[in-house]
Image (cartoon, rainbow, N blue to C red; front, side, top):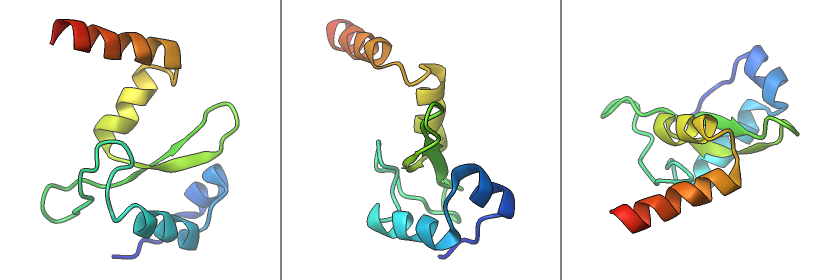
Length: 91
């Protein structure tokens, strides 16, 4: 399923609809982190454009949960690492 980005999305992320659809295809229509399928009709899981808030560079397409999770952790690798350590130590 091809998607057409809005003019606002194209401007904000500096990508075209063709770029977006290429990313979607390269990721096999799956979240780049958790690999959930982007099946619009089955679970209404749609891709979100993930980008670096410092450089505005698009990193990939993520599901809502992964995109929100990175946002809550503010893309801060040391804090994400501490979260991983916490989970490993505490199950």
